[in-house]
Image (cartoon, rainbow, N blue to C red; front, side, top):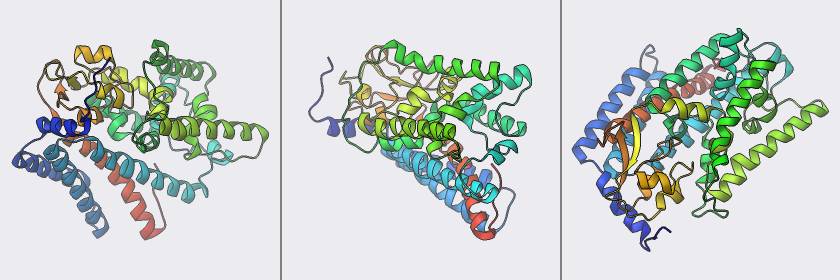
Length: 386
């Protein structure tokens, strides 16, 4: 049994002292982050609107980098970008794109037949396989969109691993938001059986096989709970009513009520088909989360607080997370000993100073494109395609 400290919150604050950088180091890293964002986001357009967006992104990126490094606390400020920026701004931009290009956020047969549906990164495992093996595009989107999303996703996953799920993903913000609302879980989930941990991998394999054999994106068409917000079906038939009911029910269970009651990201842990791909490919990324067993007090707060079931008693004893870790930093913030941090693969070298700026830069570069789409729409009434 874990021995819980009665002054957990105070201890956690003391533990983060080990993870702080000096004012000078934090400021220098923040300025470098801001400069990189300036050159990446500010290229190619000298209009006042684009300069204003660039300035906003630079200020946000600089501030986030500075305060995360200086305070030693990661998770709260990470959620500013993950929920408030990456999630909500993307949702607004996508909804505007739908309204402009097809007159409604609803997914109509006309949009399906025209192969103009914006492709989702979640579809990559079961869309890429039939395309590369049989030359068939099973998702109603141009092949160029598949390659654009595929290369973006693959590059980021190779660098950040499952940090994609904690810092970049456009869709994980929903169960993240509801999992963060309550202080304590109403329904604690502990000691997951092995089959539950293996289920997402079996589910991804099932979706790949079905897509390859029947040439249909079965997850998108009949299962995806994200469709309560993204591409909800235009309901005109009994069958469409049934599928819409599945989307709504799944969304409430895995994105809203379940995360709210359990304080766990249930969709990202068990349902998302991209999670196993992120996990398996991300094994070779250079950034790892490790636990210093000499400092660890064995209080178990990291196990309890992890929203993705990525720390177990067994992995804790080995001084590591499981491969499902999304590098969100919540366990680091909770640890009363400051025993958990970002490390370089195969070493005990602290690498927080490099991981945090990289994660923020990648996130905000992507967010800047969504902000530009919204601003351009407000100025002209037009919006680009995803």
